[in-house]
Length: 462
Ligand code: ZN
Image: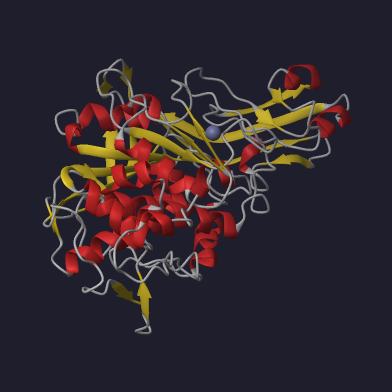
């Protein structure tokens, strides 16, 4: 809620007519010079489209191919960790690759074809090439009886087996026959691949943005996070950044465990972190707090969402979900929350063939990116200031506190925000503290601080 009834509280000789400065275009926002423009919707969606056909898994060429596509947007470093590498209580698994798979009936007709949907094969299936009866085949088939039109997404990383996924309707239509099952896959020594990008800022303190890259043709649960993270990284390039930004595109769970195992000594640099997942559906934003619960990132996300004028939900930490489970494991306890729209498992399309290009919306991707940009704006600009005229209120009227818009129009700075900033800038409070206490938008508080700094009434402390 913006405060808009302040007149009786302002005993200063300034113009009482105040104006809350709002950006007329919600998606055009200067953030330390970073601009998110409306054309991003299409670009965000295009990256999802480009990645959609690829069969990814926690290892293999699907991830490598995906990273090569993401590299058209940002210069990701490709990391490879060999099979068998010990990573805490886990071991990097064998590498899985697949070329083709199908089931043919006795007439030689392909009734299931991997080239039509990579969800048809149980992810990590071992190779098979044999004839089976319907009864035996059924022991290797997976369906969703409650969603009979959809193909489920099934994986078997740790048990070596083969299997196919299909709609329940198709299963019930299968007749007694001899079926030829064929999976041309390999599961052997190789490596696990992930992508990493560090954008260096003035400080070595880091902001971590992590997203998983291991799902096959599923759009919201996976590709949305990849696309939004890539575009967020792209928007930070060529900017004067206060913090360094580390982006990870990693296989879920095993990837974050591997990254933490390899970077154990330096993870203390991470001061803020967000795991992105399911950020392309039409639902509202949901934020799951870090294990710490009151970390600055938790407060910042709550501040941004609370002033966004959109519905949102904040959830407490739960040791279940995406890679925040690893980043927030007790030995690390990093300030990393999970930024989502509709959480996994809470939309019927989750882990099915219905999580497709129709389910993800360009405007939802753009809205997620826009809110993340707002969050980064607060991270970049949250600092303490010192009031240089702390003995009673300074005479603001003679100083004319305005800001200039892009077309050189003067906009008066919110006067209550000015008073809040002056009053609480005693060297102890950050702008975020002031925003929370005043219940005012961070941007409004920041504009007031900028205006006061420009007339030498305020000094930055860090
Ligand atoms: Zn998933």
